Picture 1 (cartoon, one colour):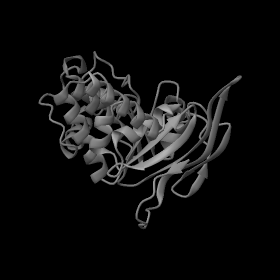
Picture 2: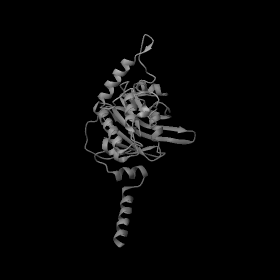
Picture 3: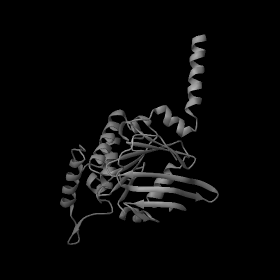
Length: 270
């Protein structure tokens, strides 16, 4: 994988490090050579065209699709998650694009779904609500009524609830699959602010996104996947959108520049 040159600085110890990850489904090589890392207090954006392998990679990290080759290291220890609970125990939380929320349940019930608190055989509703209030306040998520059904929430609020639920186990790494997809401008801003708070709290964040504007807003580094390979890594503050698009599509900067020059020449001739 090509890395754009930058001034040498001391790199933090990665929470997650992947080296030469491969995954096949029969004769289809979904991943053939993916290497990347995510450190604590860092947001890494994973970008690529449809079919580049992004979904397969995050499901490999989450233990849904055990890798076929390569190494995966969490906090310096080589691991091999083979089911989702393995990754959860390693401190990896994944929020998928569909959010997996129950519309008919309230916010507290959704936050603790499958991990409810009990006392003497009964649900500890008050304890769960207190934890929910503290967690949402910590993340600056503003929802007035925690007993309102999730179906009544906006898209941004629903995404915030899904992210908050992933933090109940205090994960080291939070993986977000298209967190701003289908959201309006205001809702997108809320979710991006939440991602920045995750970074400020010291979580490592891996964000999969097609929206390069969102990527440049919050990411520290950008890893580009193409045809199942990690092809280029950019420091976000030094990269341009044109460079990232060129890496995603496999079109060189020089080719893109030639096309722009041809368009300018035609416009001048016209």
